[in-house]
Amino acid sequence: MNTVQNNTQPEIFGLFELSDEGIILYSKPAAPRVTETVGLNFFDEVAPAENAEEFRRRLNQFVRGDNPSESFNFTCQINDQTIPAKAMLVRISERSSERRQTKTIIVDIRRVQPEGCAAI
Picture 1 (cartoon, rainbow, N blue to C red):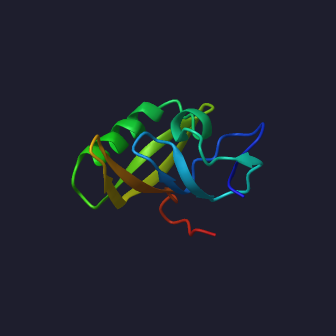
Picture 2: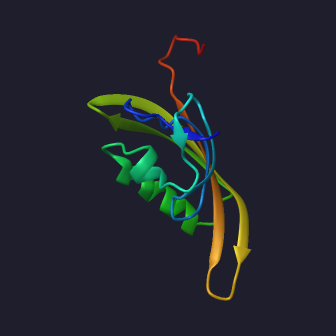
């Protein structure tokens, strides 16, 4: 089951499939969770970082663009903590209707390891 942590620091690390509006369609979090995440807004309900608007802006630019993938480093600010992270955005499908085009985006967010430290 894909879930959100309960009464703990939000965990943004993991693999998420998002609609172009930021709604979670699928998730495989890096840490165990307690409640369901599918159908929730990634930015507002799952990863409410203090600088979430910066990440949302990058996602919106990617959604509007044509690149098949993009990666970037960013600093996640949650509960007075600064956590270095790297995000990989990948466009996995495009579906067209008469009214609008839907793009599904895979977002893989990982904690950046300090230089000289190996990932465990």
